Length: 124
Image (cartoon, rainbow, N blue to C red; front, top):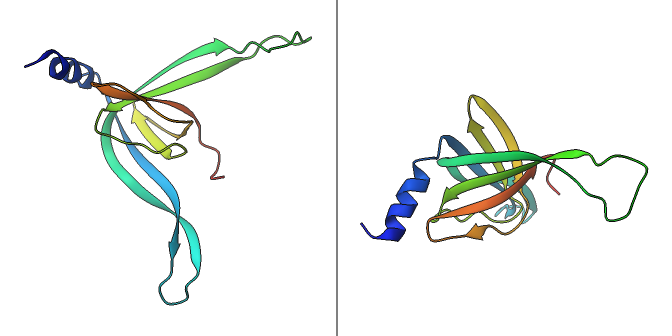
């Protein structure tokens, strides 16, 4: 096994969660010709790992209020899993299921992908 394959296998052994990836897209009704938006499951039950930490947000200008701690969540998935920016990602890990939104383009490595997440509120 070469070094890249070994690195990938090692990282994937840490995937203790499962996730569903959902996109929100327009579909055209062939009869009426009306386009409406609906959720579509892109991936179902894929292995993943959710990592999170709390950090203090630092305002760019001095304020009278203290910096508020915020949760930074990052999702690790296989290098083969292409998750579009803005997707809804429902992660189940450690007995809890939480809906997130991918906040941008993933960080792509040979061994895996890392996606920064925000809590899902609603489709834009």
